[in-house]
Length: 307
Image (cartoon, rainbow, N blue to C red):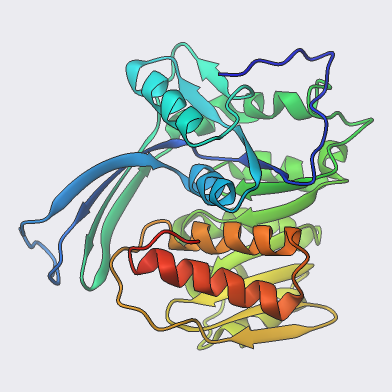
C-alpha cells in the first residue's frame, strides 16, 4: 500500500480518477440454468474484489486510467487480502480509511440464466465510516475546500443520503467532474441531491430513473428527458439489452447495445460507467463514447473482459 504525506498533495494526472464508495468482496453464485424462486441448482460460487467503486476502478485500470480508491476497508484478514488484490490490479489504495473495529464489507448475489435472482449488499462499514473516507479531499492531501480537487470523480450511492447531500453542495467537490451511480435500485433515491442541485453526470438504469422521478418509463430516452426536466445536468440511462440514452440540455443520443449471450450480470452497469469515463478521457465524441461504453458492457456481460 502506498502512503502519502498530507503536505504533498498528489499531483493531478489527466488519467487519474478518484473512485469513492464501496470496496468489498463479491460472493457470487451462478447457475447456467434458469432459477425460479426457491430453486436449488448446481453452479459455481466465486469470491472476487467488488463493490461499485471497486468495479469501476478495475475497469478504468484496464482502460489505462489511474484509479484512486476512497473507501473503508477493515484491518481484518479479509481487508488485508482485499488490499493486496487491489495492488495486483494496479489500484491506488493509500488513501483508504482502514478501521480497527469495522469489518470489511461484503456483497452476495445469486444469478441464473434468467438474470439476477437475489442479492444482499452488506456495506454497513462504509456507511459507519461516513465522512472519514473523504478526509483526503478536505485535508489538502488530494484537495481542500479552498483548493478543490479538479479531476474526475466516480461516486457511488452506497454512501449515506446525508453524506451524498453534503457532497452535492460541498466546495471541496465544486471543481470536480462528478460521475454518480446509485449502486442499486434500492439506493436510487439517494441520488436526489444531485438532481436538486444540478450537479454531476448520473448513470442509472431504467428502473432507477423511474424511482428518482417517481414515475415509470418504457424507454431510456423518455427517462433521460424526465431526469433533465427534474434538474439533472447530464444523464446516461441504460435499459439492459434495449437502447441506452445519453442526454444533457444541448443534445440527446440514443443507441442500441450489441446483442450478446448473457453470462453474468453483476458489475455490468459499473463496467458501462467506467468505459464511458475512459472513452471521454480519450476525447471521444458523445455518440462514440456511448457506443464504446455499450460495447464494453456487452463484452463484460458475455463473459469476456471489457477491452
